[in-house]
Picture (cartoon, helix red, strand yellow):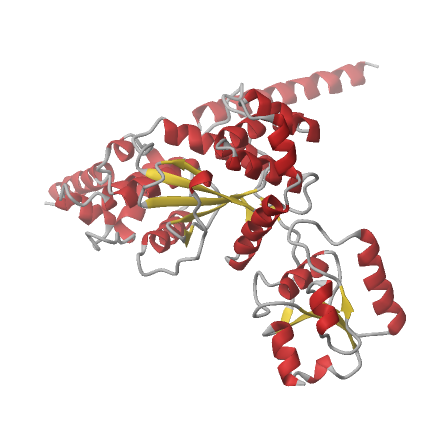
Length: 162
Length: 277
């Protein structure tokens, strides 16, 4: 029993010495921590859009036509109806609303069931940043779809290359 | 002789160590922060009206050349915050890019209803923000309050651009509400109100806050459903994506992107430089 009290006493002394040493060191540091926070801790960070990584391919790239790609047309239904690449499915990109869980599930199930190796997206404009194809591709990649490719030049370039 | 050399050496060290800082902000620095600031001012070259090292530019005391003084103050502020020499050099390099008239500028729409400050100002600070971004809610009002209290109040325009983050619940209605307020001449008052009451946000609060700002509820409700309002917000988001925006808030000064983490004091310093103060 006596040993226990000796151990406890020593532990208390060691803790007290360490605490005093810590306080003293903090006090002499020019950038020591204040005992009471004088301003709220800033724990926020800038808000990111969940975008993944995509790779650009040329409209004449053989990966577009080798039968191993799941092809998505990101334009409006009207544009899709007017012309689309054979085998492509229409998922119209919305700048404000995320792709629905149902659409995402359909895409992933289709890719898995068809045994396709990659996802290729084309859309409007030049196919670069801000165009529907590029942004849908980045959104899908950000939701966990891998091997996502975007066609440079968008739908117009794909049509001209046929 | 050796003793004389020793004392001359000591004196030189004392002078170089204590006299290099040359602006009020820098003179207040002490210890390691002062050493870092002095090193940075010797190694970093200014730009614009003087291209020598910042410390050499300061010595020239050309009253028409304010850039070096602003740079020195910024260097000392960063040193005081505990930034390393490398971090300070990187921050100044990023700032130089923003202030370089030859640097790439991005196309950003400027509409009178989106402007805070002087709509005719030559210095335009565009900000892409999300109405449901907690970080924006803390920092954008702070920036506006700081501008309001400064000499820049009537010399700059802050241009509101929408970049609703899809992962944020209700980011689209929040953006629509701001655009509706913009159409009713209350963009910034509404935005600040919604940020100051960030945690209390609900769809019902949109019209409540609008009413408190004197906006007509019926018109607000009608505009909230107007496809043109939605198209305007979507166009802003598309513009942001085209300009490489991926986070909020993202700032552009006269069309040139401000890189790095958000810092009100750094932005204020850049604005002072841009207006030539």
